Image (cartoon, rainbow, N blue to C red; front, side, top):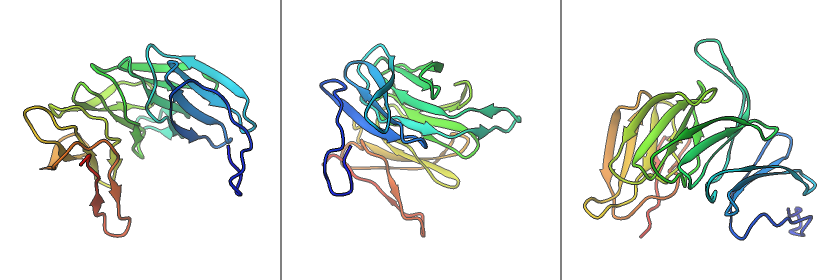
Length: 211
């Protein structure tokens, strides 16, 4: 942790390779590690809890708020993160497991959420998944035919993400409707690993590729 002057306030060893961090409303820092664990660290640099997965965790966590779902149910806040074991985990804020969802490949990218309490994430199995935040039940899945590590961008009526190029096909930027059907897609020159960015005034997308 650095202060506003760039001075180190504290540091903690959490494994030889650590992914991106996310910060909760209470300033708890969440991070995945090559040691296969998800770490929760207090604002003073103390380990709050650790959750062990089946493989290294390189994805950035997503801290979710409480959602009111369409059926009136509540989805409590939590931490959502994928692992190279192929699972996406939702953890309660005390570090206990709320649910896990198995994909068919490594999960390397971060998840996103919609306003009505759905979670979106990709997998190396080629799918973009949409599941309910409260229990991990599948709403829909979209098979791209290519590995997906890009974090999906949720717009008002569109979900945009990129794919990795394969030996047979170029990478693509894909825009889906909220029901998982295709709005449009375009081929690009190299793999898309990152999340698209959006101009908030015009809705214009900006996407970086690996070339």
